[in-house]
Image 1 (cartoon, rainbow, N blue to C red):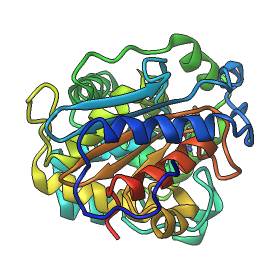
Image 2: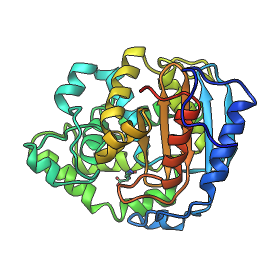
Image 3: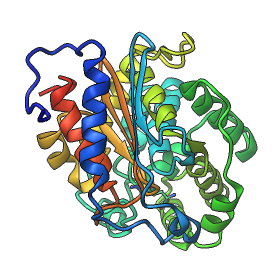
Image 4: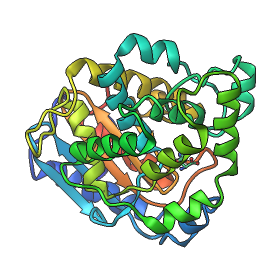
Length: 319
Ligand code: DON
């Protein structure tokens, strides 16, 4: 049976239909071998390109899964979405808008020229410049305190204490000259409100936290559920923060391809270079996908295709 192109209703189907659709999507895209595993962070090059997991957490806490949904990988840029939520909670909508911005750069995630073209504005919290600026806005009077609040906050989204991958952290710390340059450039424009080297370190740590596809689905479902983690029942952020975060993800979460993503898939989402994607259906739940091979913009090839099919088939898409 083929994967349907359009949902008949805007509601999630009941089991066993959901799991059958997840299985179909997994089987179809497991065969695709396109894309390259990221290697600009040396430790990421060792990822197994065959790993592929799909997880869906509903806002009632039900989890559906297929494939390698318990395989751990570093969260990378997906952390930016949840750090933004924590910062929105701490300093509010207006300040995030004023200090970081919410517009797409139309340029790659690690662009330096985007800063120069925009008078030093980091533009949005999803590109590296904006993410480092956002991390600097975390509550805490020292880098250590900011890291603690950030680690604790991301763990509440996941509903468990997230571990740090020390190897990936060391590997990225030894090779992230570009992020150090971006942080120094932000400082030269008076746009970074903490020490640049320390903020790159906290940012690199947040990217090195280990998650699974199941974690991504639950973290995303917390944003879909107005800020309550549907698995633990704990409130992590307010509904207003979810709205702020999801709107930034819709505009900027898939970088310069965010427009195409919204056109094809119709959901706010965030990707990371280790191959994770989280796609969020407000009021319904979230998909967590993991497959390491990436396209040229740095988004998981299988993860994107599976999200596209499932967003329509499950009626998750907003548009
Ligand atoms: O800063 C970096 O380059 C990485 N820690 C994260 C980049 C990333 O995940 C981009 N996303 N697709």
